[in-house]
Length: 325
Image 1: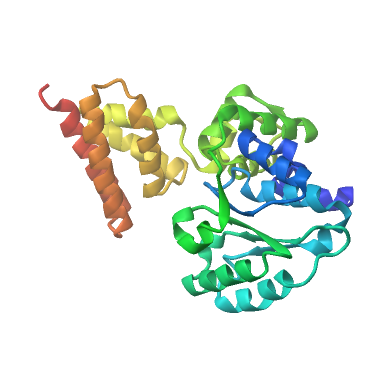
Image 2 (image 1 turned 30 degrees about the horizontal axis):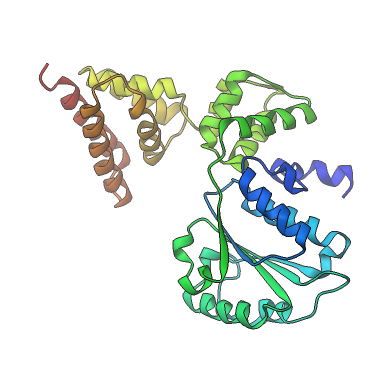
């Protein structure tokens, strides 16, 4: 790929690690995958874990190291969220799986991304294909929720559970990309990127690229502005005002979050949820706040008015905070 072609790629693709050693934050899993590459042998694999933690990257890096120059003819990548029916399993997957490998590769490899999107019928057909082609093909299935994969497939795979990335893993990649792109990345901006990404490397890199379009100097304010996320202290202030009994000012702060950042009701609830454990209030009150938060989140999911429900939640916080005062 030429430099011009690389420049127009999203940074999540441009800086995707090309080898297993560069996969961030999954040390034990990488060690096992490198052993499979070294032995040129492996079982079928199931990668499970939240988005943006390296499942697809690990599969592609492993295939690249395993097949080298023979990659193109021996590796097939499919996204099950696009092609999720039984016809895909009986057609493309089955045809590729039962053909012999090219070159000196021991077998072919099929990577099925987002496999938890496959229908139940497609998964049962895939189970039979995995069984009948085990001599010439291996499968890597990637999913966010392993519980959505039928048990017969799980029992035919070695399951690797990818953990959420830690701050130092995300920070290392952000600093690397900032140096390559000649950006000035503030320390608090790095913390803000991790806060909004919640351990999702893809989300962090996309936010960094969005901020870089505005300025080569990346600040925390810029990160929060382009990501439509409020600063943690603003959310805490809104909750603390409610707990102190000042409903009017707490409601004014809510207006700022909705108008200035364009947050939806669910976004606000998610940020309040993240900040409640850090409040300096008795644990018993935190428990009650969490209980109320869950109730209002359910109401939003059921389709109730966002503004009314969040203001009602703040009113509940006022009652909880002033109880016994």
